[in-house]
Image 1 (tube, rainbow, N blue to C red):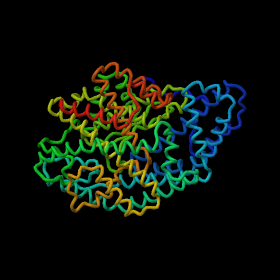
Image 2: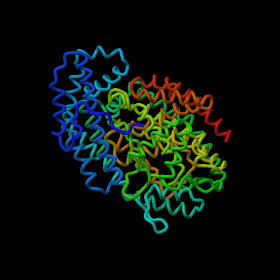
Image 3: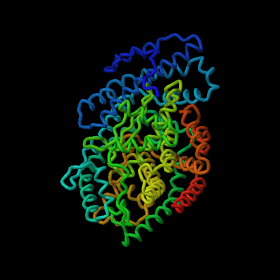
Image 4: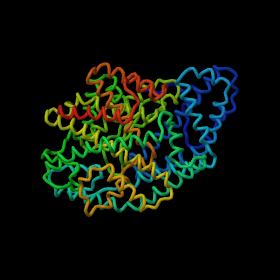
Length: 569
């Protein structure tokens, strides 16, 4: 597999982006250039595409390095230089390019191609949303969002004489010994309480600045602004509300049924908060691997059995050092696959500690990575800039498509069965959380002047609606009110969350197809991912041989399918 970047046709190979002036010269060239033919316009688009790819990749590396080590002041300084000094100054120049692109007499000649129609529509949205007064606001918001990772990365507790990250601490919640679980949970809560007020204040500041950003652009609230900026052309906020209600009606009762069975096994009237992640049947926590390297090697073997190309993607990333997999002190929380549009080889970041959830995260991010590889040769950077509903379809489908090959990590048949059961139950359990986070965001930005107390109270109300009511939170009631603080999307990428629910239903459809005809499903999956964003979301789903449908009818059908598969286990 090719490990090198395509030769640059516009920017200097030795370009070092260390100031606004280092890149503004290329904008000036594009702004001043005379375009007198369709061929020259296409060439202009390619040059702009290269500029976009180089800038996005440069910003990506700054972010990646900063999240790997939040304590490194140099990394933080490099990232902040880009988001507070370089990017804001480039924003008006991007707007100028959007105007040139939009007014070009040669634009219509490309509109028969759906890829270009989508491309131009996305840039037209940017043109409509641009406001000069929002440039410093966007820089401030980027800088504020960064603080969440720094605060979270600093959270550690001591267990058995060792200082450990919260990710590692969570493993103790799977232990059979209740005293160990309770100790870990109590220490984690105590540590989180130290940052509760700080995170509330940070979120309040983000909300107020986001609202101002939206009103500056002529919107009533940030939700409506964000729907437009995310390019949600294929569904509305009302569709989201219907989805929330369908989850409450159809999924929450199924989750409660699953939880009730576990509660009966436990022999308690109600769970304690530290009882929610361990196996009441008495089994030790699943341990699919010991080290990040062991996890990677197993994933490569598993991917190779599905399609050698998938495994080659991970091998290429490993060769280039585009993986940072294990949890460590000072590392930001979470996991991501960051596309690198110029080289076309993405970067996977995660916090593995040896848990089954880590294996699923590796597979999930591996699905994103395969998506990046399959779309890397598309002509323009904009064709590769994926809507989340499509990006998450790739990753969530990969979680389910790999299940027939999980014996790579679980040679023991009983453990394999437990892992698959855990995966399917997790699919069901995460849907109410997705709906709750999304419903919370709608309320937050529709009621922008709410108090912190009102925020906590509304989240508690949602927790009753989307929860099972089977947990006794006595002594930890405040944790119900603030559990949303552990969701980084709220701080860093607002309104990017319901896509997980939409894509999960699509992924279940792909998995259902794979049970009937696995080779054809993989073929359809690759064909859909290869499209990047050159087709509409419904067309991409159709190419994968599924419907873009998250209605209650579709949800009901897929629930029955999951329940039948759980019964087989």
